[in-house]
Image (cartoon, rainbow, N blue to C red; front, side, top):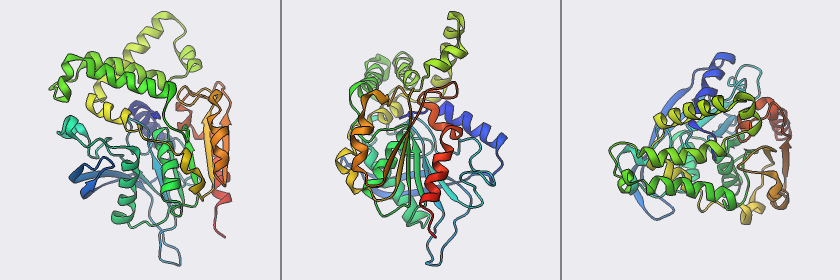
Length: 353
């Protein structure tokens, strides 16, 4: 999850990217899917899928787009480009060379979500639904039938695993960041469930039909989000006194409260409930580099889950970034300075001669 990365981190990344790395301005678009059927068998007559693109599609001799890259965001995030120094000329995903697509996942950004008006009557979407929608966006709207690379952070990293076994012939390479290819269980699920429960226990939630945000419950849920995206080292460095720590907490809570919707958060946290790539990993065909950081509270390496399951991926490799003054817990996934060389290696490994 958020990945999971927060909306705040995504916005901050976008602003610093534009300041530090010149690349073509993102182009926004929408795709209206009619009669979208969810895994729950619920149907929406119209489901809007919003997206951003950077660069231009290029076709090979076969007439198919051959330079498309899919980048997927984390829980509560948006699809807008957000990494530093990665899309400019000569950089890892040079936008003069690649056509990069950043979808707003179902329930996020400007794509269809509960806060658009349906509240808790919005279909109970899952990660499988989100990936299905992304596939429709690419194939039915953007005319892309193959991807050079599929990658994502946190929730987007988990979507990368789902892409790998659901559409195994669709991509040349896969790079999930800050994720594990197993069911969301243990502490990870507990934190998500606690966030959901705290919102729903607030009387002001009103079964999802509130007219103003249920502040007490939403503030409690934000505590889960803060922990999941936290870095003990960076927090200690940035707030070494009690007064600074409490001021940082107040600022963070206030910002989250200004950005998040309670129902959207419930859905986003619960969308992972059926996620479990483990039984399907042998279906993945493309070379896959799974990259995590040792200080990630969401995917702690001491669980040993990656070592247990990654051998099922025929062309899989696990990279664990050691904790350092440069890592930032779960948010390390947004720092290509720490994993960019592995992406460069993966692209070279999968380049067609």
